[in-house]
Amino acid sequence: MPSVLDRFLKYIKIPSQAAHDASNVPSTPGQMALARELGEELKVLGLADVLVDERAYVTATLHGNTPGAPCIAFIAHLDTALEVTDDTVRPRLVENYDGGEIVLNESENVLLSPSTFPELLQYKGETLVVTDGTTLLGADDKAGIAEIMGALEYMRAHPEFPRGDVKVAFTPDEEIGHGASLLDLKAFGADFAYTVDGGAVGEISYETFNAAKAKIVIHGRSVHPGKSKNKMVNSILLGMELAAMFPSNETPAHTEEYEGFFHLLGFTGNVETTELNYIIRDHSAEKFAERKKAVEAAVTAINEKFGSGRAELTMTDQYYNMLDKIKPQMHIVETAMEAMRLCGIEPKIIPVRGGTDGSQLSYRGLPAPNIFTGGHNAHGKHEFISVASMEKAMNVILKIVELYSGKK
Image 1 (cartoon, rainbow, N blue to C red):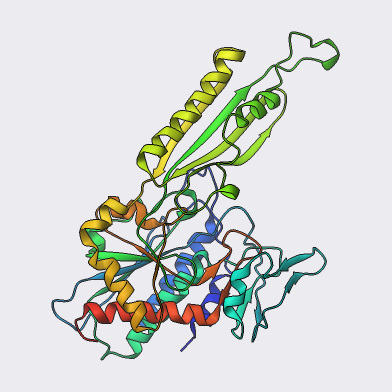
Image 2: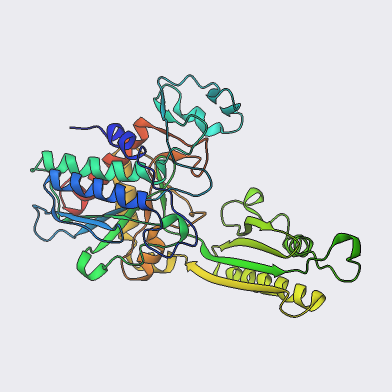
């Protein structure tokens, strides 16, 4: 039986990075490749109703043995983040980590150091999986996939393990705000769900950001620089002026916990045309609305100063804080916390400074708080995960299923 580590190392070798502005779901072919691999593995495990649809949604059912137990789903996403490539991931095991600095890539001077990432010290003596300093690792969320698959395999190998029906879904394009929007919840048939897409051991979340994305296109006027007085309109400079309108201390690098932000993801252009891409985030619905108004006001200010139509804004909501949808069914959170304690883990309730598939699923009627995978430093070259953490996540999944069967 493959270990959760074996599965994880296999999945991260399949590139599945999402792509912005794609017209198709999934946004990249690698996600379909991973979906098909998982579909075949689920069939080998003997699950029922295995389906890999044309949009790379993977669903399956492990039938239960405890009448009356609820049908629980566990969900993870196929895609990886866009900030750093996941092409040719070359993981390395650091056994019996000694608490010191880990050289990920000597030639590029990429270091994983507790002076920058003090959480490393929590894992002294454990085996870590790290990158080679040129790609992300993919623990977000292939660790979640591996942990769910490991739990399913354990239950198949132990038919006496008490459980109701267990559903699984692996979904595309979570990193670009798709939010499992095409998952057919009626056909899926779960009573509630958990996304396995969190961070450090013990984390459980049922609050997320409210989220929007904004694209601002600024139109300039290019004229020969030697003859441009009172004629040239440099769209780059207008873009810089617009970006300076947002508070410098309300960016991801200056905020934490419940503090929202404006995040400039991309700034590209020339004298004639410049494009700025932002994401806007806040846990508070009221502050979220204020942030969107601030973006609109900045665009209006540019147009009032430099002429109508000079700046164009396209802004779209991506997902909403799922807190209000979870509150009426807090037993889902409370049971997960009990499962963690029974596994010797102290639960930590934290707000997600981002979103999960659970955000949209909860609003669509499938409440889905988020539990930990054990990963750290997602979306970058310094991503790492402890093997013991992955095993703990798998055990928590099993304990949740067992608790809902009514048999401890």
